[in-house]
Amino acid sequence: MGGCDPESKPERINSSPIAKFNISTDLPEIGIPITFDGSSSSDSAGYIAEYQWIFENEDSQMGVSIKHVFTKTGRQTVSLVVTDDGGLSDTTSQDLFLSLAILAEYPLSITSPSGLSLSYDKQSLWTVSDKPGGGVYNIDFEGRLIKSLDYSGADLEGVASATDGGSLWIVEEFLGTIIQIDTAGIVLRSVELSGVRDGGGLEGVTVNPNNGDILLLKEKDPGVFLWLNDQLEVLLYKRIAFANDFSGMDYDASQDILWIISDQDKILFKYKIGDGVIDEYPFRINKAEGLAVFPDKNILFIVSDDAKRLYRLALP
View 1 (cartoon, rainbow, N blue to C red):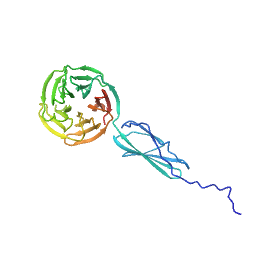
View 2 (cartoon, helix red, strand yellow):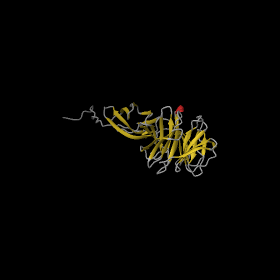
View 3 (cartoon, helix red, strand yellow):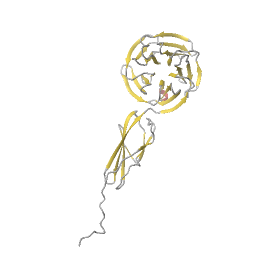
View 4 (tube, rainbow, N blue to C red):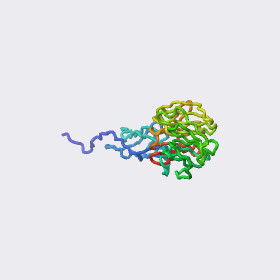
């Protein structure tokens, strides 16, 4: 007579595991370790034997919980593949948007700061206010006011240290004028430029320390890049359209390139005259109106108009 074998056991039906993971931050940045935790993954019929993390364009890692440092900004996909003890697997993915790492931020006492430059001796920063009657200000690397110059502007948007070590170049946006002043605020020379007052006016200014040439940006409608020699003669007038607007610029002599920021796009562009945009790096700063790079320290500074703050970031 047939019957059940008391020694027999029901055959286990293996089902696929379920992959899940959590991230330690909602605002991931390059250069900052980020923890990825896959411990919320599960397997109903056994256990998970392997956790594999796959990073777009980077090496994969193994482990339930791992730390990863991204080296590229922009959108990147992270995937977790879990495999159980029966060899079945499941995959889940998330898209991350990586921005430049903000290392520190400092409040400013200056109304509507716009434009930023490293001082000639690399010991401090210069900035300007774009409000009517706004001035020119020397600040330290933590945003504290060192001194203000005796100069009253109409709509100051940019500032740059001149190669003589004792003067500054500033730009008046809607006047379409570039002005050289000494560090007491006295005007040394001034010239009104043509073709820069329609649409958005002049925004950024920087100086090539190797030859004293002056480089300028017109904000938009259209965006324009200008190159002047130290006699203020225009060597190049070029329309540019790789961003919705252009709000600041600095020359990097260590690489012979320009760093350019867009306030609307929140992107830092690496740009070379003649070649165009080399790379671009998103950031999370609102109303970014000026930047100064410090290649010797591998950092850059950005000043925000709305927030009245100075930000220190890692130079990519």
